[in-house]
Image (cartoon, rainbow, N blue to C red; front, side, top):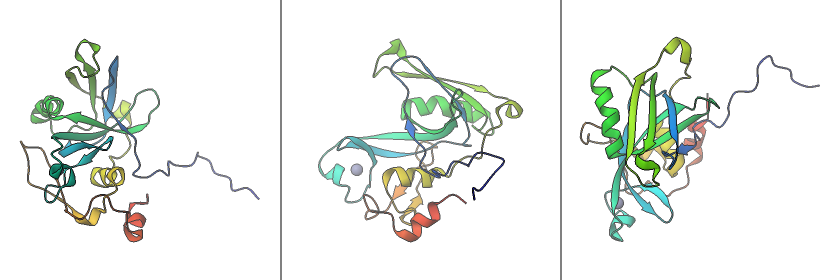
Length: 192
Ligand SMILES: [Zn+2]
């Protein structure tokens, strides 16, 4: 006997939101769901971005340079897919300029484009206030949990760190990175 329902199944990927960056060509548009950005120092290590562990950080010990990256979540206009956008500190400053004069980033329309459409061109961000009644955005995801899933960090070992240039920063427990998520924590990450 089939189980009927009046609506398609909800997205069960939970906190596994895909991460995107500003494309080399064209414009990226995002309707922001999170109230603020969250960021931390990261390394490009073994082919991917990983958070700097600050104490006994393997990448630091190997003299891999670090860069601060910020993250926010939003909805892509065409597919309505919920994604996480990664931006550099320089791009985050442009977002923070908007945040200084608005109570929240949520419902803002972010447009990101690279100068001269070059792969590593400077990212130019414009922010506009969207209409919440038209956008109908879903609830913001728990960004710390999303990043923990992306980086495979048990959330219990991560805490809100000191603020860096007014940005909230993540401080990561020295032993907490690159570990398998414990079963209890994995259960906590499942959507409710
Ligand atoms: Zn490091």
